[in-house]
Length: 404
Ligand code: PMP
Image 1 (cartoon, protein in one colour):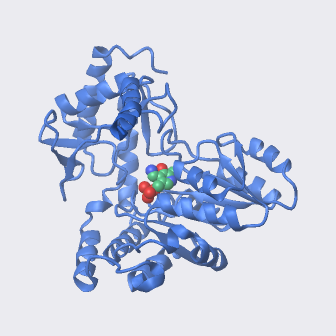
Image 2 (tube, rainbow, N blue to C red):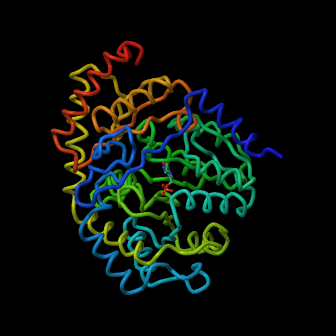
Image 3 (cartoon, rainbow, N blue to C red):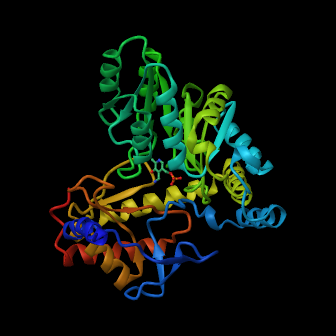
């Protein structure tokens, strides 16, 4: 049986569409972020990374690295088991307490990634709560969609960021349903932010639970980095806040926070929590250090915002269209998968500028884009070089007028 033939048939379709993924092989250079060494033959040895989700450079922060090294020497490399069987380390408990405090909740629960936390928590809630219905924003992340699929409960999709549509859909449900409204604060691909107050009010009106993904907001928004829910003073009205330790906090892992009973429920029933090896203690210690740092320091957030504003202004000056949004994510729309890849390749090869083309299925076909995430460590010179390169490419690739 020619199994490879079966695989290649589908891979060829991706290649023909221009949607085949090619990864840049990088070595992030500690202390030099956003510089990285490239191992790709076609690229310069050193490149500048413009698309990292290590939004604040915390992955290279001296205190975070020191905490991780110290705990590796104290506790060893791995956790040694699942949380249930010998793998619960003191450093996990310290981190969970820190996360509960970050969101002003009674309790928190760690997972091996943000993806797993969404999948495990949402599937458990949907599967186990009586007559559960999950109402999902139409642009929710794949990890929430997988969680809903696995829950096998009723699902209702509401229009993106549209509390009125949510209201209509909640009204249509039977009163005995356990309703779970699932949504995100900052949407990663368009960089838009949800109308949280209105969504919470609609959910409260219908007695619905709120499930909020703050993956692209924790560490970045709110006076202590508690996300948009902290910034808007709404955290105590959200039933469950989910986040990641792998983006603004620069390490890896995911979590949920909520009431003690909620976290105990997920801890007790979620297979994605129970049946997998716990995060290494050193990772937990690094994340705790990173969260504490960003609770106390706003310097990184402030500088990030400045660099985001500078890049937006420079793009505007040169007439390079980007999606207007109130977040730190700058999507430059190309709307063609082949051109998107072509521009990214030229940026990398000729200018040492690395930005990953974002194509289908990450975004809908026809909305292919370059997604820039300026951070506190990008210099003004980096911004100038990027915009100069884009300006040249816009002319070379003749895309100026087809981009809206
Ligand atoms: N939620 C959203 C909205 C995301 O964009 C992502 C990752 N890109 C995740 C969850 C998963 O988080 P992690 O990378 O920690 O698995």
